[in-house]
Amino acid sequence: MKQVKPFLIAVALSVTASAFAQQAAPKPETVIKWRQSVYQVLAWNSSRIKANVDGQFNREEVVRAANSTAAIANSGLGALYAPGTEQGKGWHDTSAKPEIFKDGKKVGDLAGNFVREANELAKIAVNGDQAAVKAQFGKLGQTCKACHDDYKVKD
Amino acid sequence: MSRQRIWDLPTRLFHWSLVGAIVFAVVSGKIGGNWIEWHGRSGLFILGLIIFRVIWGFVGSPTARFANFIRGPRAIKAYLKGEWHGVGHNPLGALAVIGLLTLTAIQVFSGLFANDDIAFAGPLATLVSTELSGQITGAHVWLFNGLLAVVGLHVAAIVFYARVKKTNLVLPMITGYQALNEGTPVVPHHKHSFVLRLAAFVAASAIASAGVYAAAGGFIGQPAPPPADHQAAPAW
Image (cartoon, rainbow over all chains, first blue to last red; front, side):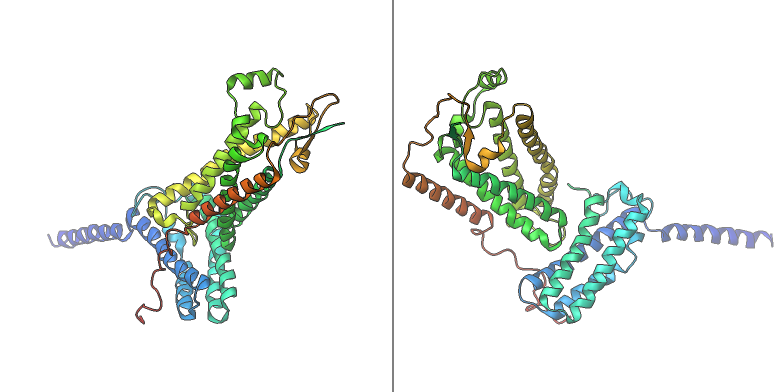
């Protein structure tokens, strides 16, 4: 009896722990929601920058949006393309093509370009004039497009 | 060697402007970034060209008019047997003309409602839901392959004429004149005065310009204000 009790407690603890461990890995649906949300925030930022490079230039607004973009770019977005999230629904069906989960090296390069140009935009936003920001914003957009062209499902 | 006038100046201007504008639109679309704005502008320009050509198909010189070159299957069959001796678009080539005009029109029209999912949207995209705009964008990308195929067919036919039938179709589209074999009668090209033809050209151009203005969103007011207007946004 004396040896059984600690054993039962150990079993109970390990069962509970593994249940927690399973919960700790987010559900695919959650991961897909996160990654879809990230792109929505990027869209918010890019629409602010676009409004400022096409119209009246408000540096503070551009710096905020560029910093937010760079922060997202540097946040380790690759983790949002975890195995098990190839298909499924987040807020809507995933727009990621199956290839993005397979072409590791190429996707990594494209993502690296995005991070580099996003960092550059955050740098230029601080001192650059409207034309310089616009030019860099265009470069950043090209890195978005490069990935969309190959890895985003067209409706 | 006598020569026959076959293409009027507006038709030739239309043709080569369209070639240039489509090449420009394709290249700017592929580059992306800030060039996407030029992709949009070239699309509007192409739309104007298409509207002009459709009007010119009714008021242009005889070889430019749809009624004179769009023929039924019987005429196409006769042409394939070598029994066609007309001037201008042959009955088979007429199909290519219609195909190119239609596919180009669909391409630019869909572009008006499309968006690039980055920082650009067609001038009329605000008129449809985001979801529909996305679907139209998909069609815009996909249908381009169809246009590319018909352009390829068109160019292949020109090469076929040059190599096999020993007929240069490119030069007449530049000079307006086609060389005739000795003895072939020259057909009078115009029956209208220069002033009347100029008036038709000006009117067609004006209508095309109005169409471009409308397509550019000229009648739907300003686009929606950008989110988080910094003038009105709170400091945080």
